[in-house]
Image (cartoon, rainbow, N blue to C red; front, side):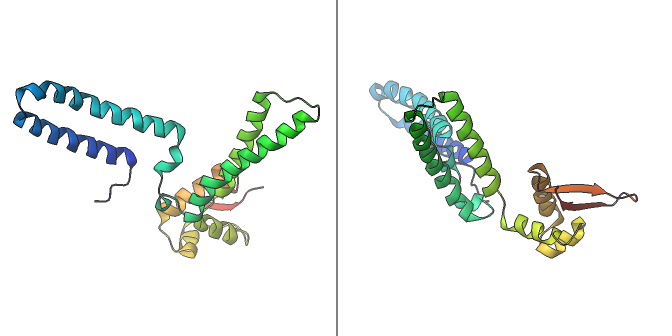
Length: 185
């Protein structure tokens, strides 16, 4: 069984540490047991606080490159946004120096819009690129798309749904009720 979810890994570690600490508690002298009990209580709380700190401030580090469809997206997600935010700060600082004043809210709104654009662009996997290339020739059914990209219907359906949500594709039903996908307008 492959465990890659960070929360599961932390839960396994904390559970194992607590179990071993409880076993060790019985074998300790009475003078030390009280101190050790406080440690056993505080340790998982500290782990949880540390996890949520990391989750809030550095959540991208919780994902491995294998969690992305294309591992290059992992690198792009980690570096493009940081570089872009630094560059946006430089540009807006220069604009403010030249006499035009922008509020912090306007600057943050611009950063968020740019970040959303990057997320949308980076989020296209190789499979999704193949689907878009296929649909340049015209509408296609789920079966023909699955055969073209050599993937299961379920994984292709997820990719199609994602592309529809991002506005790249349109889902069309003909008079007979057959569903096809075509490039978005």
